[in-house]
Structure formats: C-alpha cells, structure tokens
Image (cartoon, rainbow over all chains, first blue to last red; front, side):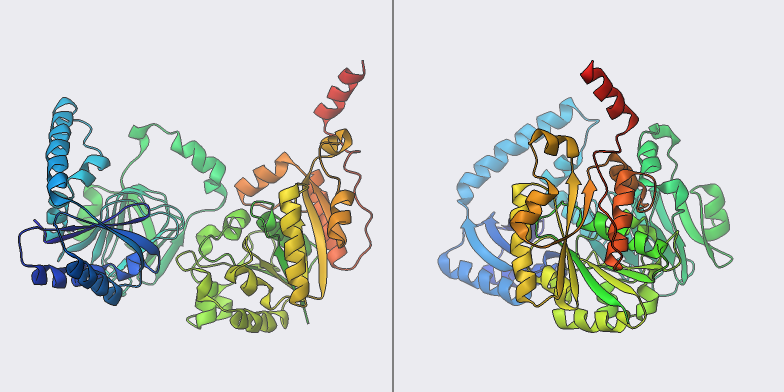
Amino acid sequence: MNLVNLKGTNSGIVLELSSEPAFDELKTEIARKFKESRNFLGKASMGIFIKGRAINDVEENEIVDIIRANSDIDISCILRENSELDQIFVHYAKHNDDSEKESDKKETNIENDHDDADVKGDILDSLDGIAKIYPGSLRSGQSISDNRSVVILGDVKPGASVTSEGSIFVMGALRGSAFAGSGGDERAFVVALELDPLQVRIANAIAISPDSETGPKLKMRRFRKKVDEKTTEVAFILNGHVVKDAYGASFLKNHLGAK
Amino acid sequence: MGEVIVVTSGKGGVGKTTTTANIGTGLAKLNKKVVLIDTDIGLRNLDVVMGLENRIVYNLVDVVEGSCKIKQAMIRDKRYDTLFLLPAAQTKDKTSVTPDQMKKLAEELKQEYDYVIMDCPAGIEQGFKNAIAGAERAIVVTTPEVSAVRDADRIIGLLEANEIGKTQLVVNRLRPDMVKRGDMMSAEDVIDILAVELLGVVPDDENIVVATNNGEPLAGDSSLAGQAYMNICRRIMGESVPFLNLDDKKGIFATLASVFRKS
C-alpha cells in the first residue's frame, strides 16, 4: 500500500493519505508525488480533496505549503473528509464491486481498474525501473516523454505524442505521433495493436502517413472494419528507413535476434 | 515586401480557419507566395483543414523560441508550391508566445512572402493579441447571426484601438433562401450594423464540409463557395470583382424543387 496516492478528477485532485505512518513521513512523500507530476498537472487552478486520514488545521496548512512549493497549481479550495464515514463507504463500495465482478468476470473494464487504484499503483510502481507506464489514453495536446521505454495502456490520439529514448509500446491504437530512440538508438521500435500513426520517428529516420489514402473519409471507413482484420504492427528501421510490418515471429527473429 | 493579414472573428466556429485555408489556397493559385500561420496554440486546426497534419515536425513555438530555423518549420502545401504553413504547437498554450515575438516573425516573413496570413484563435485574450501583433490588415469573419455580429463588432473596435490599418468583412455561411424569406440577415444588413468594407460573401455550402474533411481547401473549384473564395482573393489583391449572385446559381435539386413549388 502506498503512503500517498494522487488521483485526478475532472476539476480537482484527490489526495489519498495512508492513516498509519507518522505525518512527517507523509510530508516527504507528498512533496515527492507533486514534484513528479509537476509537468503533468501544469498551472491549472484546482480543488484538493484529502481523504483516507483525519488531519487537523495545522497539518492541512502544511500540506498546502508543500503542494505550493512542489507544483505550479493554484489551489482553489480544500475539502477534508470524515475518515470514519469514509471507511464505511469504502467497505460497502468494495462489497458491491466484488459482487459485480463475480457476476460479470469478462468485463474487467477501466473503471474497475480505477477503483482498485492501490493495487494498480503497486503493479506500476514495481515496473518503474524498466519502463514508463501510462495507464490510459493520450488525447490531443497531451504528450509523454521519457528516457526509458514507454508503454501506453490506451490509445494515442491524433495530436498527442510519445517520445522515448527506448521503444514505444501502445496497447491500443496509435493515431498520433511517436518518436522512439530519441537519443539516437536505431534499434528502437514502435509497436501498437493498431498502428495508424500520423508520424513515426525512430532515431534520425522519419515516416509520415500517406496522404491520399488516409484522408479522414477513408479513416472513418477503416473504423468500421471488423475487429479481426486489425493486426498488431511494428515500425522499425530497416536500411535507414522506417518500415512497418506485422508484429510476429519474423520481426522478433530478424530485428531482435530472438530464436 | 509582402502584407501581413490577420483573419479573426471573436466568436468561435464562424469559419476563421476554413477562410484562412481557402484564402491561402486561392492566393497561391493566383501565383502569390503565401504563408499561413496558425496562432491557435493548443487547439490547432489549420493543419488538419489543409491536410498537412502528418508533416508537422517543428511548430510556431519552436521557431519563436529559436529551437529550429523558420525554414525547417515551414510545411509546403500538397498542391501548390508557393503555399506554406507554419503550424501551431499542440502541447503548449497561448502564453508560450508574446506579441513582440509575433511581430518580429511577421516582419521577417513578409520580406520573402507576398502574403503572411495569421489564423487567429477565438476570443480576445492572449492568442488574439499575438495574432494581431504584426498585422497590417484584418479580415473579420462573421456569420449572419446576432451573436457572431455582436462579437465581430467588439473585434472591429479592438482592431481599431490597435491601429490595424484596414479592416474588411467576410460574411460566411449565408443562406440566400433564408434571407429571401426574411429569416436571416442579409450581407447588407450585417454591413449596416458593422460599418466596415465588405470583402466577400460566402454561401453556406455542403462542399465546404466535404473539402474540410478531406483536407483540401476548395477555393477556385466550380462550387459556389469555391468561387466566392476566389473572388475574395482577387479583391484582396486589389482587383475590383463584382459580387456573386448567390441566388442565381441553384443546384439541380433546388431548381427542380422550385419547379414543383410553382406548379
């Protein structure tokens, strides 16, 4: 269980604090979390909802100071929550979740994942050293840049971009831009369940989507294709050019030297 | 020495970007060297309307910050060799650029191009101030609706306050049939309210939607809107072109319908 969890809502941030450790311990963790997501949060004005732990006025002020010092956001209001009441809510909420999951095991959708934020946080944290993992879709105007490989667990929409010094894995449709091997690594590659990008750059090579065939009209038609026609594809450098191929045994063998 | 023109409106959704794309295409068709600058940082659209989205590597913010050369960020149009696009950044916001920087950029570009056309974002905040900073001339786009005309009036006031030399009006998305019935303001009504020179009237045309979705501006083709935009381009260049009779050129279905209505 994490000491501190940050969750974004439409108009604010939910700051989930663990009730066990000393408050001082939490303070450093809060500072770290906000520093980490400084760029992501930007300069917006937002409300903060503190839950999971009963805090007093002095502690609240300290938290506000820490957030101000470690991020650019403008705190418009702070809500505290009655922790006992919350625990009752959480208790019942979890019960409902469990029963739902049992009745419909197939649909472990994203919303459920969000409810189990603690579990998710742990899994992703444990992979932290290997890759940057983004649990969701990137919309137009959003971008991710990392020196590790990047895994996007959703789609990358047109106007969004992913940059990595390593490789890029999109567990959804890549329709925006991807820049793998930004440090110059020509072995880097880009994999997506649906590889339909505006632009793919790998090291010093660049490939753009063809004009005439991918007008929005045709793209719309493509959306209507049957699911089974979609294939996972990979973009990589071959003889200095970015090429696209089906992701499978031949790629693994030729490009990665797998047996 | 070229001319810097800003295309603006105040209200959103009246067709600034479409107008910019078509004027640029039309002027290029008339053999002018044109650069279109998308100043709507964070909500760029001009690249999509021009069908050049996939070519973007550098953008306006990169140019202004000096992280690339102007030439590197310029995207040449698919169809016209003398038409260029300087796209906006999508991951930044309007504050990434200042009016002074825009002014400098415009000064630099007009040495080389016949027309530098700024596509202004909606609103009157920083984005608007950036777009008009280097402009010598303004094209205000409005639709014949009270809300759009109200905003256009405000914009014209702001342009005058900023000493933009010449302000002209494009009335977009006019429906002659509705004007005839008295359900819509005519271009003359709009001119009466705004008291500025009329540059052109563009009829509401389905072809615009198709052209926009295909990323190929229709200025200069056989459609009524395409002709209207071409006339606007000629007027920008100083020619005196009579206004299209929008009512005259009915499509085959409208003609048929009117035959049935008469009988």
